[in-house]
Image 1: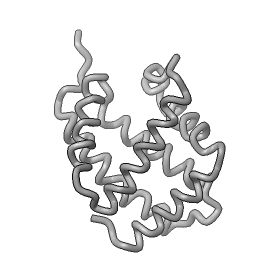
Image 2: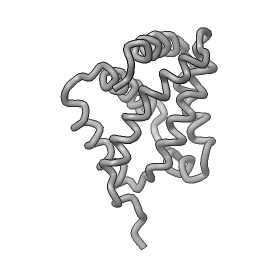
Image 3: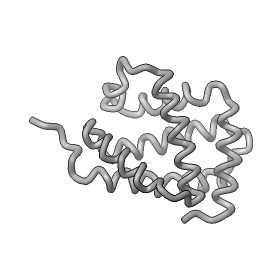
Image 4: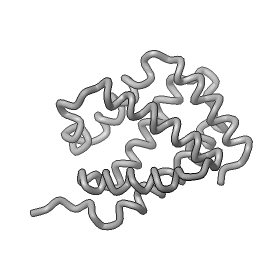
Length: 141
């Protein structure tokens, strides 16, 4: 579980980046540009739909940091869904890195402590989703 200071810093930063109208567009540019494999997954996808999914996911990340009950099941479900879509666990590392890079660009108060807070809040979420994926992410031949 994250410290109270990490949770506070993350929530405050998330609130600031959420006010940036370009945050979600920039995030997806960073994320999709991080790998050809990721770019292929998002090709032709409804941008507004996936941006809304990211907003929902960030709310879940914040709620997970706060220890809200029931989120483990949601994160496990996300892991299973992503496994069926052949999304490899390393893609979540790209997701995390793109998210932190975009937060750093969007949050005028972003500093080393804020970055540490984002990482400490996001890591357990990435770990739970990846663990739920199990070994079911290899593409069929």
